[in-house]
Every structure is written in C-alpha cells, then in structure tokens.
Length: 70
Image (cartoon, rainbow, N blue to C red; front, side):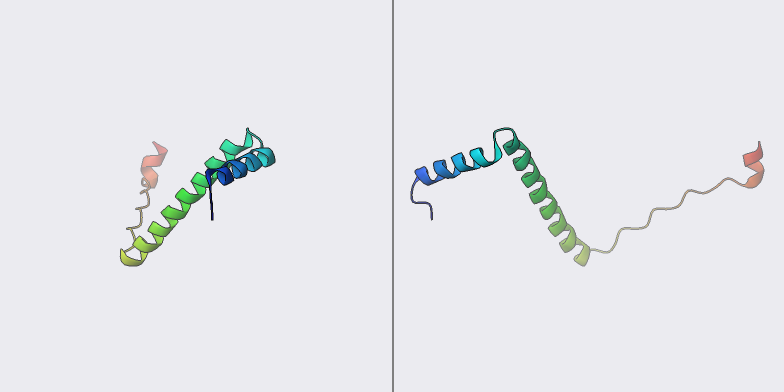
C-alpha cells in the first residue's frame, strides 16, 4: 500500500493542514482513550462471561431510633 516514505510524509502534511497543529494532540489523546476503553470493554466482556459476578456491597446499617435522639 505504502510504496515509499514519501507517501507517509504527504499523508502527514494533509492531516496537519486539515486539523492544524493544536488539534492533533487532542485527536491522538481521544484515539488513545477510545482504544483503552475498547480493550477494557473486551476484557470485561470476556471475564464477566467466565467469572461469577462480584458480591453485592453490604448496605450500611442504621442506628436504632433511641441512639439517634442522643
């Protein structure tokens, strides 16, 4: 597909012209977060199908009514 490094240079220049220098780091950060979220979702989907669900958190117990008045 890419015959030479010149193709990569042309693509990089086109991206720089389209998005500008300030927008590229934001785009890369968003892309990284998206990939990270996808990986977490995939590992969560696999682990949830093989592992039992985690135990439910215990609800906090309330104090008896006579102790609340004190």
